[in-house]
Image (cartoon, rainbow, N blue to C red; front, side):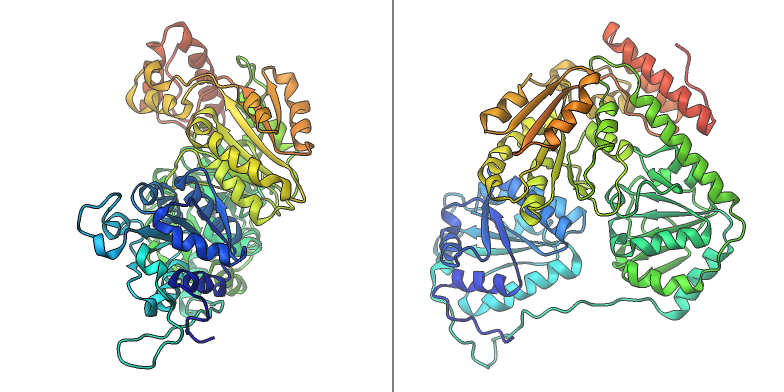
Amino acid sequence: MDSTAGTAGTVADAVVERLREWDVRRVFGYSGDGINGLMSALRRAGGEPRFVQARHEQAAAFMATAHAKYTGELAVCASTQGPGAVNLLNGLYDAKLDHTPVLAIVGQQSRSVLGSAYQQEIDLRTLFQGVAAEFCQTVETPEQVPMLVDRAVRHALATRSPACLIFPHDVQQAPAAKELPHEHGVVVTSAARHADRVVPARQDLRAAADVLNAGERTAILVGQGARDGAAEVVRAAELLGAGIAYALLGKPVVDNTLPFVTGPTGHLGSTASYELMTGCDTLLMVGTGEPWTEFLPAPGQARAVQIDIDGRNLGSRYPTEVNLLGDAGETLRALLPLLAGKRDRSWQERVIRYAAEWRDLLRSRAAEPADPVNPQAVFAELDRRLPDDAMLAVDVGSVTYWYARDLFLRPGMQASLSSTLACMGCAVPYGVAAKLARPDRPVIALAGDGAMQMLGMAEMITLARYWREWPDPRFVILVLHNNDLNEVTWEQREKEGDPRWPASQDLPDVPYADYARLLGFHGVEVDKPDMLGAAWDEVLAADRPALLQVRTDPAVPLLAPHQPIEQARNFYAGLAQEGEAGRAARRMLFRYREDEERITGGDGPPGE
């Protein structure tokens, strides 16, 4: 296909037409005078691509990021200049840090007033140069349109990061270029794209196989970049007698129920993954940029091989010996024939035992009494009922811990969240984008009350706008209602040794289920553990979106695996200053550490 601008009337029409040529299905955004020309073009396009209106530009950028994460496609968001542009940043930084292709189209005041300190005039190139570092350009002339759209899309896809097009209002309304001349100063481009195949050189594959075959105790760590090689990761573990752990975004990559899958790594990881990493002598990292490097093997402990499609990530988290630049699936398929099957399965048998002990520990913790409901029990009951084709959208906070640890995802399920940026308020916008992409599948959004008050309740209005058009109306929102910014509360205790400070940590008491019913949804409230199973059955079978509000106990600890004794002392010091309110959490924390010490050994907790 050549790069002529087509028959559209305005430059904005030409942009929309070019997006359609790139198979863009949706534009997430919020209108304003700075993009009125773009809105008019989208209206004239008759829903191809469709405009999806969020309640806030931050949520629109979250939706675009989520669309790209769930579908693997380029996503587009749009906003007006000034405050609208600023509001996009959180969602776009979420895309940048989680390596997700998003194109932001941002309005700007007319060129004739730029530099005059005009209303809502912001230096947008400076604003977006960090988040859209790979490509940020202003559309200045009609002739630039196909070239700039093509380059923005290619940069976003190639670098898996945001790109930005700044679109002055007067340029949007200008007549489109009907045909581009073949002359100096005019660049003609195309919207064609073909799937690429990147495989390392044979000698590098051989070097990697030599390291892996020499190992006696191999650990495999996967991230989201391994999703096209899930079957190959499992086969590698079988050949090498290895255990598999996952980074947070890698959780949906592998079947969490496999006996040698040890669960999450990092601060919210499992004791089994801790044992896997501290006991291995060889590490294979596939498509991961795991940030919690203190939970990886100590430098010098393990020989390491890393596979990643982005050469900038190789060797960036661990001193790897062999780095393989390539697609995870293609690289593993080329590597597998070079791996010698291990006869000695004693290491993998140990890993399987670690994983089984961890699952027993989770069941024990979920069964512990709490006031009024143990949040782990909420997730244990959901785990038994997860639909095979569920799409999960997860928020940031204590809910992230329970998702990472207490849900065991199976093949066919999808899940995502704001992982590296860890921005609260993402669950409901992520869920809306997931449901728009696959309206035939159930969505479950998992959030705490802080995240719901920040952004989730507003985007429930967006959900109310669209749900009736979906063939499967199931969209369940879980709210852990404890009136506490719970993860930050535990971080204050862990990092600072401070007590909980109500002025910063107390949240207003909001009747979330009542609000859901006000919007026409199904609302269920739970304040007793024996109500959980029936409540999950009810919301998962509802004929409309449903919200499950569970009163949970904020005293249930958020404990990293094998917590160092120094940090444990901080916990106890903070809780000791909280009087009677801290005693229940202190007792539960003590029991948790005792349970973990029985599995992992090491320093015991300080006495009561």
